[in-house]
Image (cartoon, rainbow, N blue to C red; front, top):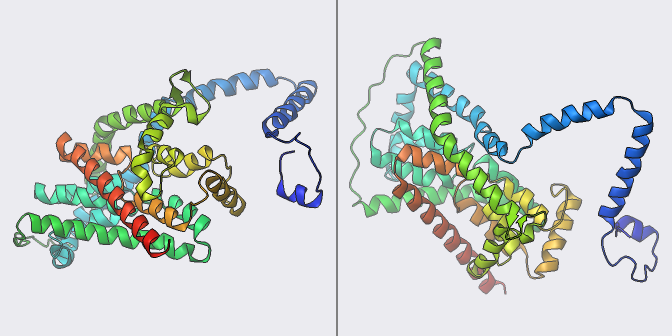
Length: 397
């Protein structure tokens, strides 16, 4: 009745219409109902412990204090970033990094110091954006902030692994790795285009002192790191907190109030409106659009949202990937490797997470630049996905 493949294969039988719906939820409820009855007979003082657990859960699983968790999630990354920067700066090595990389980065119209934010972007976009403070000129900072999100942060890796594993089989590693190469290439090309657009003039020569090496001072490092962490929590954290609440509300509320079925949420309504726009990129399914919207809160959320919206649990296992691929094809039989690659490309290039957006606003001190960056990345991601899907469809219809 549950449609378990192994059971059906070993015990084939005619269900004669009695299995025309999923009884899985009902069976689970009956199982746990029986377990609860047995536990009441066997366990003592369980009610008191359950009450304490419920009080803790009311705090730790609160949907709004999920917003606070989103802020705190980045603290270890931010701490490690500024600790490393403080040590490099105080030891005298930071200036040498800029000196070594200036020639290479200069070809793209970037400062040698832009190399560090771009490398950090492979870990997390938030500290990478914050690291642009090392650049002296505001123009260099803004240009670097624009291209840093094209680096594949660690949160995008689960997306690559899922869709490459689902649709590319023995070439899954190559498909996933290609995203890293494309991201670096796009960052360099965009920087070069901006440089030419600005006139292509040679940037100011790098004049920098190479100080003597010295042992970093613990007190100096601590003051530096603490001030940066406090600054992040008091400013960027506010925006992240409010945005997390907004995204949670969009995905958990509908016209009838709070809902359990994602298809009835405001997010689903928005997704259905955007389907015609995403269709030329081979992504014309409202479930995909909603998963991409949820990914603005954190990129790895795309994977869990995708699994929930298509009703496939444990998507990271081989069996879960197979079930998820089948669920997608049940809705859209033509969804294949080309669609999956366009989706991976879109996830690589589109708007970074809320935390990164808040950090861009804070570091640039300009809503105009922040909104312009979001619009540019959305348009660029959509254009790239459309080109890849349309050209791929033409080559192999």
